[in-house]
Length: 250
Image 1 (cartoon, rainbow, N blue to C red):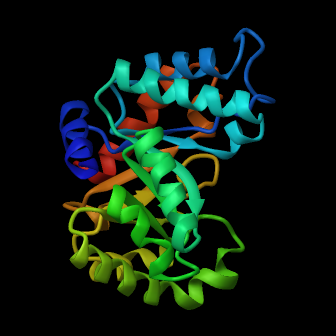
Image 2 (cartoon, helix red, strand yellow):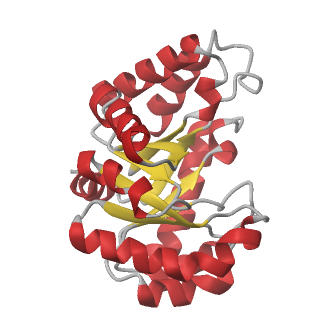
């Protein structure tokens, strides 16, 4: 189960850091032969510093079947090298047999531990994922234009997330961007035991102070570009781990 695997990794590594493998082929240093070798380097440098890895499916799909193959190999690499969970950042949101097909692909074929899902089409777009595994529901994301749609409806999405958690215990989490600082306190008060996946600390400039109001909750903070494309990957990951520890554990 995802949440148990996360908690074990968090306790072992004393970390709430998630490293995002947004491994864009156009940004990978030329000394690496390709994405897989690059990802292997990232995992080797950070495995003892993280509570999870998050794979952004877009940077693999853009390369067609070869990219999908590299994604499969990356997942296998993480499983063979670590005991930390894998979150697939796919942001899927469809209904019926389509959602079921996505869920089967990700949980039965790729065998990831959790998937990000879009709640725009309602619970029918989420339940097929919960029947197969764990899902992080997009609540308030870190991008600026999220205000156009998500802010007016996030409270209802939170209610839906809690309803689904009641029906599918320990299978639901929420995505809340660190850049939405003004909403964090309210969501924290109302979110109960829902785990949080938090993007936006790092390249997007989110404030780590928000973690002070989340102590005691299951929290995962994703950092991607600021770590994987750093000159010294391990040093950057250590810096972020220490920063998050300062606000969450201390």
